[in-house]
Length: 115
Image (tube, rainbow, N blue to C red; front, top):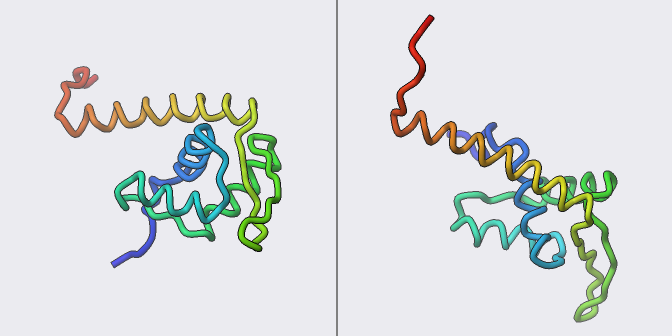
């Protein structure tokens, strides 16, 4: 049996990370835990997925980071930028369209007649 996330999850890490960071700043492992908790463990992204996604989003200007020491541990906290908020809106709209379309098929919606 295949472990990990299915192929249709492409783009979902960005969407979830941006959405969570739109609410408040977080550090990487906190995001890993929050995604797991908020999806009732249906989606479990490893640090090996989350950290590269964070770095890529920061490079493109969708996130900014700051280093902070908490209980003697240095952590990098990420927050969303205006560019990131616009990107979140775009990909959330696209994801909503896809999920509506898939839901339509799953519910047996009638399709246009064949050619």
